[in-house]
Length: 230
Ligand SMILES: *Cc1c(COP(=O)(O)O)cnc(C)c1O
Image (cartoon, rainbow, N blue to C red; front, side, top):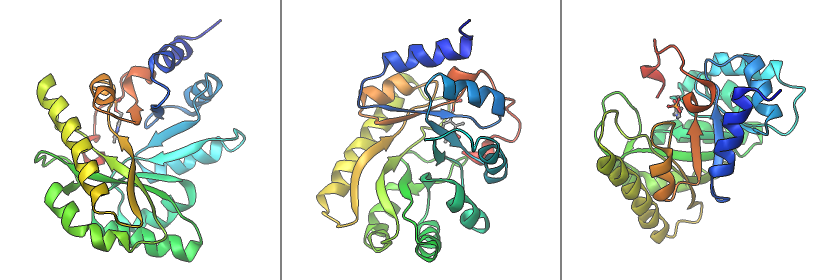
């Protein structure tokens, strides 16, 4: 019998353009459900808390070919541990964090993939570079040679109307073009990580290449203490 989780995963996968990678956001999701998602074809999982994630990653070590994406706010005292478990960091939200990851990565002899999280609109509940900060910091970021800069990540503020959400995604794409025109050796924007359960179709229309879906795949999570993660 095909479970409803498997059906949801398959129907969303089938609806996505080839150019879009689905990341299954498994924060607060059980290891059993993650195994089911794996069986349905998921190979990219997103987690937002180091502690919870590393425990689950260890329990899933028998599954081969998984790419682990860190999508939450990363505290610098957890950076080293996170680097030994995750291959992607979508939420690099400051020059300081990038430099810390870069130093640790070079010591560890690894080259994690990184997206720079940008706040297109002011949003006190989220971290991220403002557009002007990001443009100012590009030269310094470019010196972080142990990081593989892949692209930009954004999360629109809660409660926007559709046209405003579209605008946030489109402005993120335009910012990517602007960054590419700087011709920095180490920073080429290949990926736009944008779109969650509520807005991924809009994000895809605006050029998203990676979407991060949780609720629409796994169902509602408990909401408590989620705010500080994104
Ligand atoms: C929780 C989370 C998601 C998934 O959100 P859903 O609305 O459940 O799809 C995506 N991105 C980030 C950064 C998150 O923290």
